[in-house]
Image 1 (tube, one colour):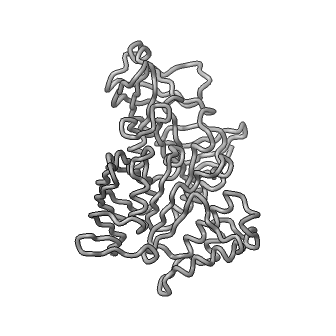
Image 2 (cartoon, rainbow, N blue to C red):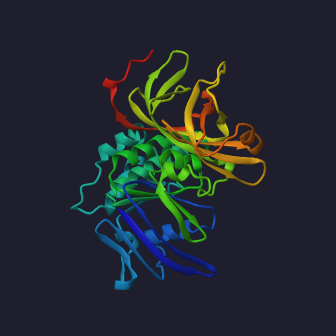
Length: 372
């Protein structure tokens, strides 16, 4: 567990916040100038706040009241930056092994073999950075961080410099990192897609303050909290892959509700997180008949929020989880959408993109049917 409480004045900007980051990925999310850089610099030991306390497990990294300020190189933090910062004169194997220099002799961190296997680096070991793609470089940087046997990982927008194809390549490795190591990962990003795929916890920053923190699916489902705008609003459903069909669709189980998506890259039995964008949901008061859409989910309206312009956001509690739908005020009036009203959410299978589906390695093959 990482616990942070900071107060610092930077010119006209005031940082005054506190939050906790448990095991898993805690995302610092906010617009430019919200304070993300100041927080990460303080955690890394690059900024000494005027008052504050940073506790990592049983160790105090910073306690201004008691005069404690552990130097950056002794904080046992593994760093992953936007640019991989690999040594150009070293091959991949030597770049990874370099991380072991920062591991304590008494600390049994991840082994070289485990890191190579986890990150799929075996075929790259003799290459130099100049002959690696952006995604491959980031995998090497992650491996180097793991071999330093850190007590936490600090990832500062590690995918920001990658194109969509390289992001898709690296995201599964970050998911695996989240699911297989038992240390906090503090992750900074501007990408809602990365939040939906990776975050266990979200800390929303605004003007140097923490305005909300909590489980990722709870925070993402409240557009009034997330500074992302209505066009990026959506919700996360937790599901399990049931089977893959021969027509190119995968069938998922989300709280007992079947969910059909374009074939996902996960095995039957595997748990997945699915992000459903609010603008991809059509609402109906009665269960519709004769539609091409395969996903029709019953639910009950829990909240309605009007915004600027003709649109409004509708929150629904369903057996599959909380869903958000963006509709016009005119449609809401025509359907008589009110809190407590029963409704149906209609989701086209093809509206869910591959990058909106992320998975873990939890696998229960014996309880699910075979592919059809």
